[in-house]
Length: 237
Ligand code: SF4
Ligand code: SF4
Image (cartoon, rainbow, N blue to C red; front, side, top):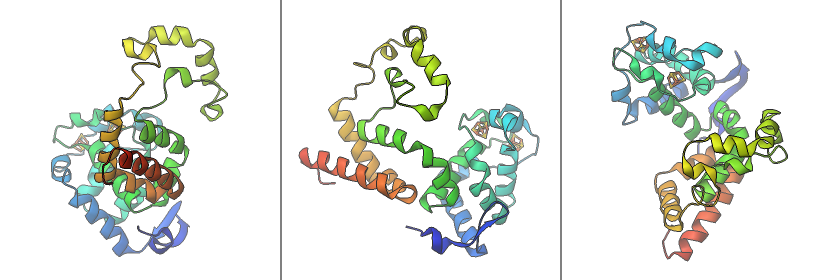
């Protein structure tokens, strides 16, 4: 694990923690070493088509063009700055894949996020802080929140809109087209075999290990749940 204290040489320079240049270069090398990288960047015309398609660019000081350009120019300082700031504004919708150059700025951001998480960058910890409960739910049960769970008392941090949804839950659920969304007893029920397969995938692919970098307590809980369940199945974790 990359220790945050060892990684950062000073706090909050220009709004984000500063690191030595060789650390920035190493992080950039990790981005470029990803198997998907050659498929996601072919140079940049600076045409701005990705920006026009990007919903996040409308609401934040964010631009997929700036991401593609910084990487294409191998600007390691700017790429590091983007990993501490910009990349968390992306909604991962991939509207930017209409790039005429064949780039995938959203895909580049996926890689940058993974590198940020694997190295325990402050931005990754901050961005994922509010998602511990959702990560726990998905990785322990194999599914996300169900419509029945949208109750204001259960999710006060989701704001006043949740009360409106829960007050009119029956209506909302009828409005959802897929049949499986109408009930919590079928579509949201993950088969035991599927759950075991998910545990093996999360353990073997290193996804569970990534959680350790941003939340050690959550990692320990999930690891225990998965290992106990796999041992019951006679699978060596
Ligand atoms: S659409 Fe492609 S070529 Fe145009 S600015 Fe965006 S990344 Fe660059
Ligand atoms: S994936 Fe990210 S960068 Fe691409 S269009 Fe969507 S929000 Fe914008």
